[in-house]
Each structure stands twice: as structure tokens, then as C-alpha cells.
Amino acid sequence: MSEKSKELKKVMISDLWSMKEKGEKITMITAYSYPQGLIVDEAGIDVILVGDSLGMVELGYRDTVPVTMEEMLSHTRAVTRAVKRAHVVSDLPFMSYNISIEQAVTNAGVLYKDGAADSIKLEGGQDMAEAVAAIHRAGIPVFGHIGLTPQTAALLGGFKVQGKSIDQARKVYDDAIALEEAGAFALILEAIPKELAALITEKVRIPTVGIGAGVGCDGQVLVLHDMVGLFKRFTPKFVKVYADVYTTQVNSVEEYIKDVRSSDFPGDEHSFGMSADTVEKLREQLGS
Image (tube, rainbow, N blue to C red; front, top):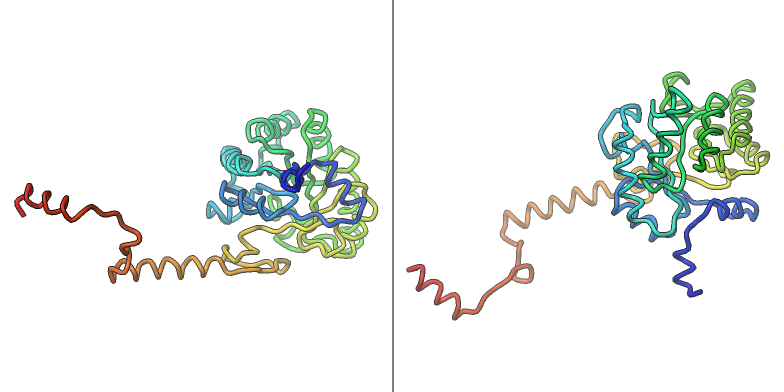
């Protein structure tokens, strides 16, 4: 097998489990479009999350709650068309799995079958274990998500760190065990104390991926728009910003406006031409 073929080998769930066993860190990031999928896959990311965070960073909603199944399906299809190597996870949006087990399995099937996702993700711990088990029985891999769950943040007192007290920490821990037992193949741990995240990572057999949960997790996930400075409404404490793509794009558009108004663009190198003889004959025909 060539080195190029090895690079393009699809990341499977077994690969993620093996990485946990070997102590190799798992890298995960969001993508919501065909170009973003191409970029992060080429960079060598292990897991791509088509997250319902697209509601805020792509669609301009106040939070993730308004996101629909139709929107998730459309964005998931765009990403999966681009990706060759990374494992693609698609988010079940709010109220697409909360009403009944049948609803949860049906909508998971839509993102898995019609969206071509490699797995689906849903939020919730012990309260969602039955749904996770049913989706798993249907043959669809499930990525769990506990700690701070943005879809139901209002019930948690807002976007706050979870699991700081002994009772809260025990609940988050029990959520992790319940999801593992229900068949989840991995867990996102969001906004919980690093000590709690490290303990959960030690106790569960499946990989943990942290976001605001410290370095002790088996891997890390960030929202692409946050880490490249493209989303300017706010930057969470747990985000490391690697670029300022927003400002770069604004500056580029400003330069374009300036060049057009000064006639510096387009130049000859950006234009097509015809022979002087043809131009002269055309002028004669037009009487100019």
C-alpha cells in the first residue's frame, strides 16, 4: 500500500478505539460545507463533526435550538461529499429525538442513510440512554454528548461549567457510564472540570473527546469558526484562536473595493483580448 493510500484510509470506529488504547490523541473539528470538509480532511483531522452549532456560526441563529433536520441533512451531505478520510459525525438537532424512541431512530437513520454520515451524535446522558440503545440496535453508531448540553442549556442554568459539586460530578460520571452501557462508541465531554473529565476517561472503555474539559481526555474538539477567528460574536474560554480569518477576509474585500474604484482591477492579466485587426474591422462595421 502506498503512503498516499495510507493517508486516505478511512478512519473507522475501531481506529478511534485503538487510538485510546495506545494513548494517541484523537483530533476532532467541526465543518459545515463542502469547502470546509475539503480543508479539514486534507489537514488530516481524525473526526469531523457536522454540528448543530452551524445554527449560530453559519445560519445566524441566537443558539442551536432553531436548527432543523432539513438544515442538518443539507449540511451533512455537503461535508460527506468532500471527505475521503475522516470519520464524519452528524448532530441530531433539538426536538428531532426528544419526543419518542421511534422518532430518534427514524431521524438518526435519515442523517446516517441519506446524509452518508459515519455516525450520529445526540445530547443527554441517562435520560437518553434508551434512545441511544435503540439507535445502536438499528445499526447506527452513536457518539454521546454530556456535561454542558447546549440544546438544553436553559435547564442547566445557562452556558456554565457542569459537574463542579460532588452531586453534579457524580451525575455526569453516571451519564458517561449509562451511555457506554447503552452502546455509544465515544463521548464528548463539554465544559466540565478537567479532573472529572480525566476520571471519566480513565473509567470508560470508549474514547472521550473534550471541549472545555482539559487535556486528560482522549481527544479534543473545537468549532472551526472559533479556532480560525471567523465567528466574532463571542469566543469561549476553552477556545485557542489560531488565526484571524474574519479580519483577513474583511481586508481582502476592502482591497477589492479599492481596486475596482481606482480601475486597478481588472488588469490586463485578468482580461481577454482580440487582435487589433479584428477590433478595427468591428469598429468599421459599427460605424465608430
